[in-house]
Amino acid sequence: MYDVVIIGGGIVGSSVAYYLSKYQLKTVLLEADNDISNGTTKANSAIIHAGYDPEEGTLMAFHNVRGARLAKELCAKLDVPYKQCGAMVIGFDEDDEKMVHTLYERGLANGVEGLEILDGKTVQKLEPCVSDKVTCALLAKTSAIVSPWEYALALAETAVRNGVEVKLNNRVTAISRNGEAFTVTTVKGKYECRYIINCAGLYADKVHQMIGEKEFKIIPSRGQYYLLDKAEGRRVSRTVFQCPTKDGKGVLVSPTVHGNLIVGPDAEDNDDFSVATTTEGLNFVRNASKKSIPTVDFRENIRNFAGVRAKSDRPDFILEESRSVKNFYNIAGIKSPGLSSAPSLALEAVQWLRSKGEQLKEKDNFIDERKRIRFKELSGEEKQELIRKEPAYGRVICRCETITEGEILNALRTPIPAVSIDGVKRRCNAGMGRCQGGFCSERVAEILMKELHLDGLEVLQDKEGSNVLVDYSKGGSSNV
Image 1 (tube, helix red, strand yellow):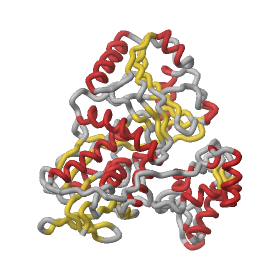
Image 2 (cartoon, rainbow, N blue to C red; image 1 turned 135 degrees about the horizontal axis):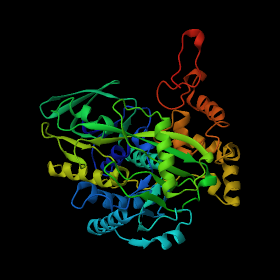
Image 3 (tube, one colour; image 1 turned 45 degrees about the vertical axis):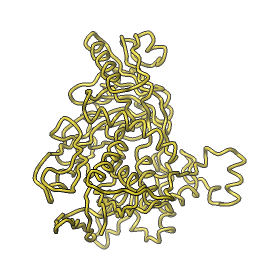
Image 4 (cartoon, rainbow, N blue to C red; image 1 turned 120 degrees about the vertical axis):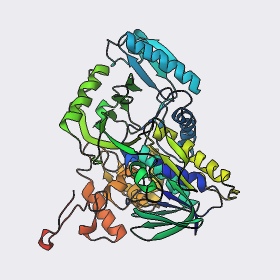
């Protein structure tokens, strides 16, 4: 019998697992996919928002601001790439100037620090590539960028090191109740527990309705992006937004923590949950971005991708005990600023358990740190010493990102080890460079085969079914 079952291993579920791992609880996280952070968390703008956008008094406003502060602390402790580069919301006319002032006042009311209103000339001095038609901007100094999948993995791995169980490939198929105990049935087995925390993202409404009444609806919204080579990475030094509309924060242009430039997204309701990109969507992103930064060189594009956000039929986050099922807690409809808010939302789940009468006892030996080896960031002497101890660090596998065999082996030996080529990429950045794995994927696959004792036909690109090799003589088919 578990005390708590967490359903969903994105940034929210991983945050809940991290905070619950501080206490003497028996906790398990169930994830439908074969890896943590393999849904919305891995395909978004990677922004830790300052908190000026949500309306005062909303859950979004409170949790954005508190979550952003926590994110900075967590990324430092858990060795997650993070940079407080700041952000600008730029305006072009009188209506935009009114919105900039509205956002400024809203940010002050929400408790955001470091806000300034700039005129067009000052914007040009700070960001020379911004359009010369800009008349004003809101500068938010506390806005940051992060590696979202590494953030979620760091939280989940730390939770595992502190006793939380993570069960991958465990899609929930049914939930029932017998007295005070739940039985959560997955494709792999059954898990009994006293409390359920629903962090299932795009599927949160369906998971809730496995046992409860219909209380909310999730509306998938697809956003498409360009990821540009590091040659464009210095086009801007801050995240540059246009003024928000009813559809969201609009198309942004931003540096990434890995030195690239990201441009996007659009917003399109998407009932089939598709993460396919479209010519229409990408053209919209490209044209819209040129209003902000006319000189972006899209010839340097190295990848297009799409993510699906979990909007709901409510205007705010859903953060509450189910109205129809006692001891079932929903954290749902976590659209932007969800990445920013995640740790703060997790703290609410902890507080909810306390409100149910749970006397949460902290662990004496809680592990609250994590360190990764990034070979290319070491000094020459440090590199030589490491290679003497571990020769695998002397073999560079990914030349674009200078990722060594030692780092790839580490990715296969973490508390939540990679099981696919993209799983390795998310942990150590192999294949994230200009060639997007064109030269190193084969080498990564060979390491996977050796370390995980796989046949070549069993190697996955990413999710289950994405086999990179198929034996058609045996009737095989590929989903790649």
